[in-house]
Image (cartoon, rainbow, N blue to C red; front, side, top):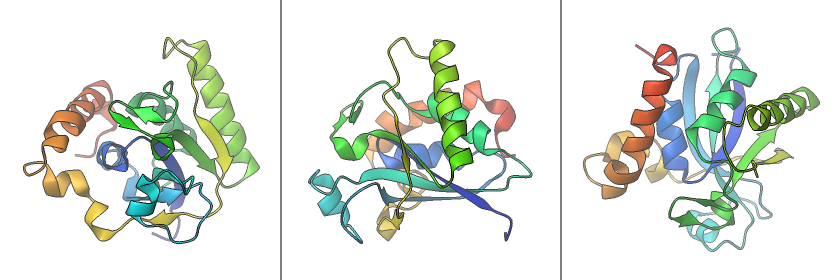
Length: 180
């Protein structure tokens, strides 16, 4: 576990991205949280106000011997709609924006190159509005947000109506990358 690296991504509700990325080979841990804002140790209630400038994000801890940063970024373009500003489906607000938070210049350039390739390949019919910013601090979300889909898929209609179809589509398209 000492050789793990992290990437911080936001693409709408963190429950959706968390559920998608948990199933990928080489990804060892996914933590829902907040980043990109202006206050320390924000709470979910504060984030939902839209006044903190934080985005709902996930921290992906991955094994670079099994999956590369650039591959995670490419999967990110498929895991959400990066063309809608401050929104994913019915979730609206700056906390639901599409964002990549890099830690160094190499990650920044990789993210920019990947974004340009996705646009050049017309992956989406509209322009990608994803922010690519330097990571300041990642704050883990409250415990009840962690592993949310897996713990609540039979209890919360949001899981079956919103998250399950995204997971199914992603798993069908990227079946070769899924954990056994």
